[in-house]
Length: 147
Image (cartoon, rainbow, N blue to C red; front, side, top):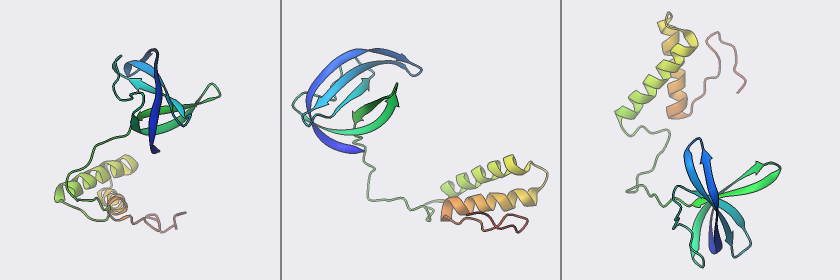
C-alpha cells in the first residue's frame, strides 16, 4: 500500500545482521500517529526527514504476536514513454520465443523427453495461457479440468 505521510520522528534503533547482509534499523513515526520500521543499508539514511512529507510503501507482518509495519520509500521509477503492457499482445518476437522456450522446458519436466508430440501439446497449452489467458478445458485424455 502506498501513502503520503509527514514524518514526525526518525530514531536509529540498531544494526541487524540478516541473510542479505547488515541493515540499520530505524523507527519512524508520522504526524498521524502511524509507526513503523525502515531498514537501510547505510547508517546515515536520508530517505525520511523530520517535518517533510514522504511517499511510502507499507507492508505489515506478524512477529512474536506483534504487528510490525515495514516501511520503505515509494518507488519513483517510471517507465519511459506511454507504452503499456497488455498480456494478450506480443510486442516483439523475442518475447514470444522466450515464452515458448519456457513452455517447452516445463512441458519436458512434466512429460519427460520421449513423447515429442505430447511435449508440444502441453507446451502450446502453456504458451496460450501465458500469452492469451486461454486455459485448456480438458486434459490430453479428454477429461474436463476443474477450472
